[in-house]
Image (cartoon, rainbow over all chains, first blue to last red):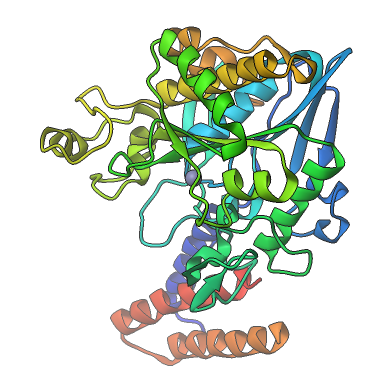
Length: 373
Length: 47
Ligand SMILES: [Zn+2]
């Protein structure tokens, strides 16, 4: 009945399906984040908007509370899961900081669904590794947008909750969905839940961590809501003193749906977004790889820089992840410092934050907990 | 809807499997095997 050759073919089909399927499903697993002793409690985004419970949009919130009263700050990483510096910076914060004063809420995987897949036709790696003294820790590289398994189909034209018209795929972009809709798409419900968190915890300042391609003009930048212009300017001066050049970009009034616009407009909080340059999601790059994500070296970007096409310097040494994360951490520290100068009663006393200089010198692995083997 | 889709993909998967059993030429079996991988993956990973 089953002859030798069909038996062989079925065996090959089973083997290939098993390994390919296992590889594919592995994308949906969340890697462990190992909070330091400073963590005071864990919450879920669905605690602030219960309909999100059990959906792919629910995600963990790491809460740090100081003994003294102060301000409330929200830090978002992973709003765009293909921008690893924001995600890794949030994890570094979670694994290192303690709070003396005020409260800090860190959401490392703001668009959790976006971490479960990759951008089609990009050939991007599924994960990248960071060496720690005890071994390599791996982190997911996801997609810019929500997984279409969780939100489908895309409209031809996406109209954001505040009326901006965008291309259809932006319907799955968390950073175009604010202030969200309680009965909207999954992405809009996640955005609504973030707004609920901001309102219910009386957040004073929100910091959204992102990366952009080196050929994109808004880069090495602090984008600020107009209510936070003095905050951003003070932070920029402090960063300049440390040797980090950041440009200041005012959030355009007519560009809707973005965190730095709608958090300020809808909830009245101070809002800034920090951008670092990431060659791995630019359009000029050569072959994508985990090393491009981590080491940030790419000969085509060097060439483009030589032709004056980029908005950041780009040499053969590249722009490594450790430098991008150091920039984010320096940015967070400077913005928090500016907050305590401008509104001392809303100060947040952050301790244990790795200094940007130490991250640059010792690498990310020195500040990450050992991998769970 | 999800179950209807499962049934359609299961039917096509079985159909390709049956083709491999009937076919005598090894290379035609191998070609159908490649198609079968796609159907098996789709069948198992439907969400
Ligand atoms: Zn982004």
